[in-house]
Length: 143
Image (cartoon, rainbow, N blue to C red; front, side):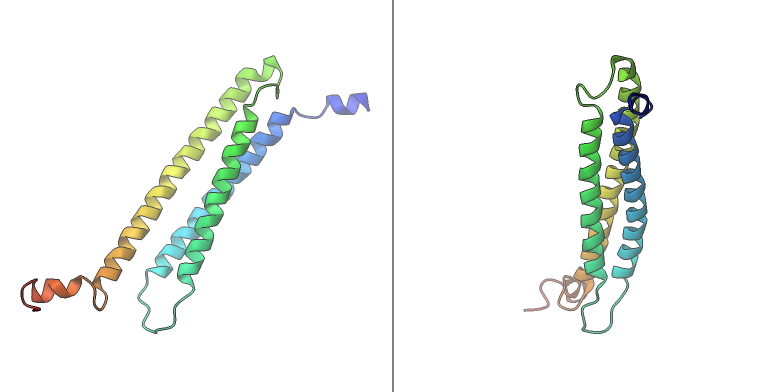
């Protein structure tokens, strides 16, 4: 058994692989969210609320949850006492690479959400009783 434990990779390798898997999952979920955004923004002519808004909410919360889990794994990856002094430089490089990728995805996610909310607001403003009525009649013509 002593020989078997010596052949196991260090614990930081597991944290690194789990964080990489989280990053891949975030990328996949962001593609799914983009499609859900597009579908939710399509005109809906019936009064029945469509489930597209719900899908957007569910996928958004899933992405947020995976971001938090990945951040936690990255902190554990670089935690003190988790690796040998020989691994220190490698661990820091792996942690930095993964953190940079996670930060890039986080910025892309925020930009995606902001764009969706802006388009949603524009649609709502153009709807019946929205601000678009003032554009037609002017502010002084209604009263």
